[in-house]
Length: 114
Length: 114
Image (cartoon, rainbow over all chains, first blue to last red; front, top):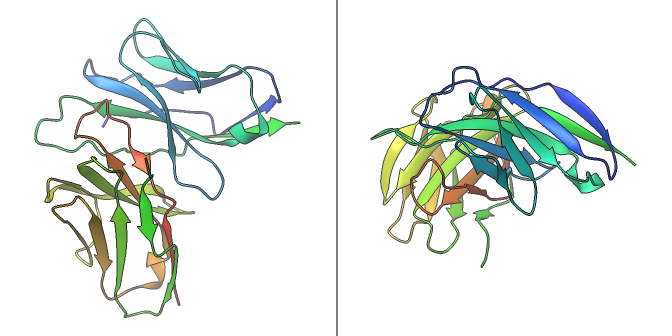
C-alpha cells in the first residue's frame, strides 16, 4: 500500500474550522483516499473518502489536490466531540485477488480547545 | 440497523491459555476484518474474511486464527497466549470487498494476558 504522511498532532479552538493535511506522494491512479477517526476508548469511525474530486458529507469535507499527491480533511466547525486521532489511508480498488484491509499509520491527534 | 457487536467486551486470561473472540457484523455485510491495537504498534491488520473465505492475513504468527460462518458472523482464536497479546481487538464489517466501501468498527474486545 502507498504510504501517507500526517502531522503527529494539531490543535484547534472550538467552533473554528480545522484543516488536517495528508501527504501521499506515491499514490497510484487506483488508490482511494479514506479518512477514519478514533475517539478515545472507541473503535475507528469512517469519516469520508474520495478518488479525484472534492467530497462533502455531513461530517466533513475532503479536498484533494489536482495531482492527488496530497489531501486535506476539513472539519467546518470543530466541537469537543471531534477530539480524536484522524487517520488518512489509501485503498487500491485494483487489488484484484488481494485484500482491501485498512493500513493505519500513526494518524494526527486533534485536540479541541474550549 | 444495529452496529457491529463484539463479545466479550473484556477478557482476562493467563499465559498459555487460548481465547475465542466473537464478532457479529452489520446485517447484510459480508466482509469482516480483524485488527489488533496496542499502544506500541498501533492498529494492525490481522485477517479479512469474505463469504466464509479468508482473503488475506496480516503479519501475525499462526497462533492467531479465525473463521467466518455462513451468516457472516466471525470468530478469531488466539492459542497459547503470550503477555504481548494483551491488546484491543477490533472487528470491522463492510458491505462488500470494494476499496470504496467504508468499514464499520465494533467497540472492540479488551484482552489482558497475565
